[in-house]
Length: 439
View 1 (cartoon, rainbow, N blue to C red):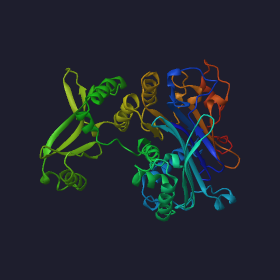
View 2 (view 1 turned 180 degrees about the vertical axis):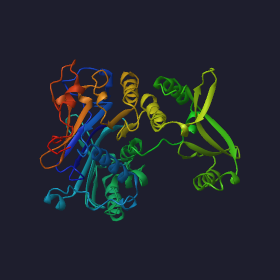
View 3 (view 1 turned 30 degrees about the vertical axis):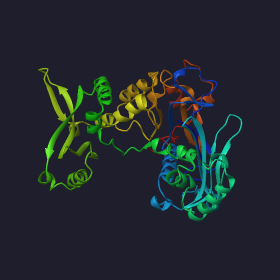
View 4 (view 1 turned 90 degrees about the horizontal axis):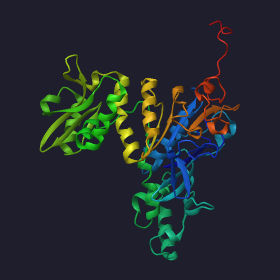
């Protein structure tokens, strides 16, 4: 679970700005949305609103950037820009950028913070968040790294830890994160760091342009997933009664004139059993033969006969809905943290509201979903608590500020969609009078 995230002097964030998923004492509905994470309680749903250019997508970009920084061996692998700082303030050019995240994994709440300038790490620290105080695991200033001996598996031998850290300080370069280095190469010496490091791959950041991978493969191999999908899809009223997979054997001659499929074919042969996916097609080598698997949308014609159409024949919105099925499955049954930008892209408001209602009403959901949206129909207290709705808005310095709806006194019967559209809570565009512009 993601508890809170903070950013400073990066993109549209000038001063330190925090987003969090903590419940407010003012909100009392949907108690099943609250999840106990050791000494903290967090919410499993959040919708973030804001005008175009307000910075809500920048929050998600910062989350994605921190994840990418942790996942690579060195920052040069992702080519971090030297000019990520807030550019509308002269002081921003001389200050480093900062990112921080608090999260729950392995029965502990961790806090991780990094200060950097371009591809140079200036400061870094990882600690266990306690109810009254935090317990440092390691701290770093430039290349000087200190690790609490209680977390070193030499049995607390301070001399062994000193020798280890002296050697490590000579190896870690300024463009390497200590969290990544310890987590990747020294999991036995510092298992608690490995636990924190392993949380980041579970954090899924989904941009509007991303598509689901290996969907045909998942439908075939995971009966529970297939059952859930074919329970939900008919409820969406797209005309699709079910989804199924069409599998055919292919050889090299079948793909010689299609470069993307040819590349997938070669990769499948080189990696038997590993699915290769593009545009809802999967190629995989099974039992010594290469199979092309495509997703079919089953419709029922006027005679009651089932007709299978390739999913590529469906509308963009329908395909987008289908691509959300693995995400919905993970949130409801598996767990993980999903951060999604523009969740409603290409999808009708009634459809996206139906999906959010299903997640909201589930008493057994395992995952956490945080998303940006412009879709005002989701501003419904039957789906979200007031503390699960956040707004992004620029201040007088054009710096992004974030705040939850629960900062306002919201009656449980209030129509928050109307209030939002009337500008009562902020987070909407400010337009000049069109007649003044001679529109």
